Image (cartoon, rainbow, N blue to C red):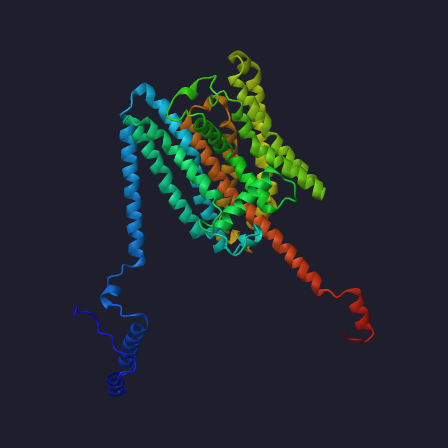
Length: 468
């Protein structure tokens, strides 16, 4: 009646005669006919599906290109609205306002960047057959790189959209609505993390929160995931500091105002909480090393603890600039800060290359023709290792320089340096996880070889001609 295909029962006598008459045709025609019959029988079981519906379904490639096009169109619209909103403000207010906007949104933007990089890490591990679920003791419901990238995509959409709404509403005089944008965003992130129902990757969220709890209170044996996440937190200490100041302003209702800029403000630039939050990730890692020494008795753990302790004077000497006279800072405390910064950078660089990455492994790769687990993707390309080592040294120094007090209000410079530090940590992850996987594989091979060796009782039975 509507021009669709008529459903034919599979046991129809007309259909049986139609099959019988075509029994002498070629194989190609028979194959096509069988496909048509299966289509009719499938429609009989599942309900009639018009062929026109199947024909107009777009291909996955076309859908993917359409999504990418929408993504770039959305990005252009956000940039255009944000730029026009900033240009509407007066020149004297613009810089202060942008500093505040960056303070609220740059932590989540940097976290989004870290999630994208983590997806790339997992993709490379999957390509090189490094069993990261076994290394991190993940269950069968762990997220793959595709799911990580899906989360990063949504974060990339939501965070800039909230920032654009904040700029637009503030520039058009809707201060109260503008102030609600970062509050709603932070509240939504917190709710998603602690949501107790089985949606939004419940097992992964609880695994992450449980790991954070173990980092804050290292009252148990330290696992690889514990100190791995704690190491990543040291690279994001500036992110944690900005999160603390953002939450402080929200609780004191200072969003979309410049009251926080005053020196005596609770959430101002002179707040004692800033160096305290900056130093927390290093203290967490320090306590982990001490706990590991208590459990294993290895002196290497004490040397590693010493490395994290060198970050403490860098942070607190830098913060002194806001609490002493400028002459005293320039003549006495600044040279001490430079000395402690150089010591921390060189010590951390040495530990990265020789301990976390195992420089002997690099030397072996350079001289041997035998490829290794992860290194086979870049085997024979020495420039990759030289790039990683050189960039690690440079970025270690810039990350320490970022803690300098006079850079605190240069938000674009600090944002760029923090992003570079996250990129350095992204490189570090590849070789640190590979070293752990090689270590685990070596232990497994040793255990297998030991199981093949007969024990003393078996050897005695065999020598006496007995069998068990």
